[in-house]
Structure formats: C-alpha cells, structure tokens
Length: 282
Ligand code: AMP
Image 1 (cartoon, helix red, strand yellow):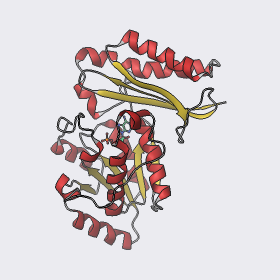
Image 2: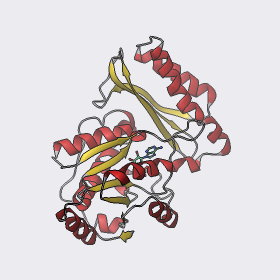
Image 3: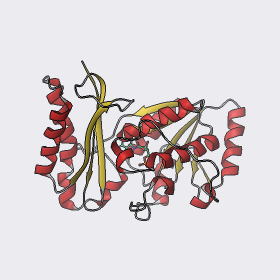
C-alpha cells in the first residue's frame, strides 16, 4: 500500500493506472476509521482493480463554530486498518496542498441543500462539493463509495456527478450500526457515558416512525411529532431537526408516498449526531 501526500503524484499514479485499463474504486473519508468506513472499503475491494482511500479533514465543510480542530484524528491506526482491508493507495494531503491560495472558482450547491444538514450547516455542502470536485479530478475514480448515513451527501454527490458529467458511478452503502442500533460515527467518541446510552433512542425513534408508517400513518407532521416527543422524553439531547422528504430530491411532502427519507439530527453536549432511514411508501 502506498501513502501519497501530493496532488501531482496522486494524479500521475492514477493516470498511469487508468491508461493501463485499471478500474479505480474510491472511498473518500475524513479518517478516524470505523466499521462504517470499513464497509465502504470492503464493498469497493472486489469491485475494482485498485482501491483508493482518501483521508482529509476538509476545512471548507466545517462552519466557524463547528468541531474542525477537535475532529478526531489517528493516522497510524487508519493506516493499519486500510492495510488490513487491502487498500492500494491512501491519499493523505495537507490542507495547504489542497487549498494553496484563494480559489478563483467556487462550487455552490443550489438544490437538495436548503433542508436537513444543509439548512443547519450553511455552506457545508458547498465545501463537500468543492473538495469532491477536486478529489474526483485527482483520483479519477471509476466508482465512488458513499455511506447512506449521510444520505443528503449522497443526494448532493448524485447531483454533482450528473451536472458536471463526471464519468463516475456512485455507489451508496447501507449504514453500519453498533449492536444497540446507534449509527457508527467518528463523533460517537465525544458522547458522555450517559449520552452514549441515550443515543440509542435516535435509531429507536426511526424504527417507531417506520412501524407507524407500516401501520398506515402517512401524515408527515404526526410522524415528526411522535419522534420529537420520544427523543425529548428519553434523551438530554436537543433536536436540531427531524424531517421527512422525498428521496433523493429532498422535496417536502405532507402525505407520504413513494421513496422517502426520515432524517434527524440531535445535539448532545459535545457531539451532533445524525441518522436516517430511507423507505418506500405505498
Ligand atoms: P466521514 O469520514 O464521516 O466523512 O465519512 C466518510 C464516508 O463514510 C462517508 O461516505 C460516510 O457516509 C461513510 N460513513 C460514515 N459512517 C458510516 C456508517 N455508520 N455506515 C456506513 N457508512 C458510513
């Protein structure tokens, strides 16, 4: 496995492999790898000749009051995990390498972004789209793997790939969870012991909504208040949002029909957790 820190070397290596007809599977991450990231690597490995993992905590996608400096990092551990998963290249650039000066062109996401995390984190998806625009041009992937835990990100990347004609196949991967149902996240380490116990209520509230839908509930407001009450009564966290939209368009729907996403974000003292479920409603 090779660790590459410069854009020039990465691009050269990838161009060479592409010219030899190799397929490239790409897993973008911010590091501090866990089972969620590992599931993306495991999916990519048999589907591609070459697997590339990038580790880059992208400053552009963090707001001024967010956890950029505190974001957990452990490259040595990540290195070992990637090696064990048969990754061929880790692209591990510095922020200076990725953003050497003021940009003269900016990427702005205009659809699928005024709701959910896009609404609570202004500029976040512009930062995500900008870094991916660059990373796609550096890594030249055949397939790119993204987790559905960040389902809005998947929707935005789907738009980016289609709008800018990247010859990349987007592969969404199911959310990996802890045994009690909590979605795996690098940010879970910031939960206190008590919060960690309460955090199970997030996935429980999604299950409650799912079974209410199964039992015939179609009213979006009713489902949201059911979930909100459950989280407020059973956790010390603050609900940032609980919302239901069509997926992947992320358009509002009062009465549920077709493919929908039920999504939530809850703020605990040091971590903001997100989770969602995507389902087909008859
Ligand atoms: P991050 O390092 O948080 O930017 O995540 C990198 C990739 O891993 C993104 O595509 C995430 O959606 C994905 N990911 C993060 N957590 C999970 C999880 N629990 N299950 C599946 N994929 C995940």
